[in-house]
View 1 (tube, rainbow, N blue to C red):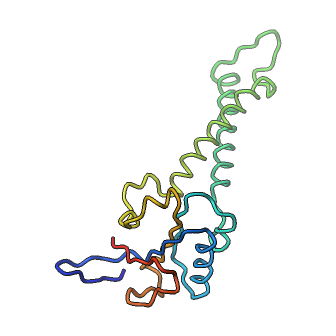
View 2: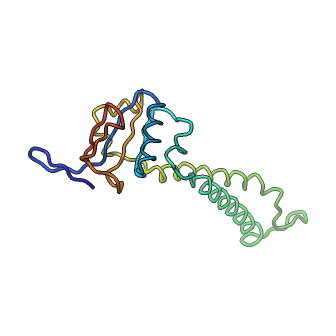
View 3: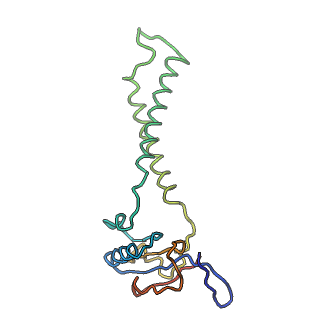
Length: 181
């Protein structure tokens, strides 16, 4: 982290924030930052922008694998629980039917598969996104509320190896501000 000295206190810089009016300006800044070698940055937009993940070099989300594992665990638990209760714990032979059959087990297996996959999707998304997040240094930006309405924000973080607080950040645009921790 880079440290800047204020008049009567010392504060830590989180990064430099640039404010844009259009998604095209944001995409141009992202591409320029990547070309200059920056790797630790984030974009905040009021709506999804097609192609921004590729422009930022973001890896593919592991959420699909988490959901798939949750669904497989749910289906396995459902089948094992029905087998165990019908064939091991309470083996009752009724009208010559087998102690366990797959056909009547399908609805419960489906339900538990969907239930656990859904829970994994929601809680996995929260975990991967670091939510809930009650404070983030970017919230200190004076026009932060515009990020949910009509502004496109781009932050290059101070933990990037190329970041220097005293650098000329004019290449980012006209509205550039240092954001403190």
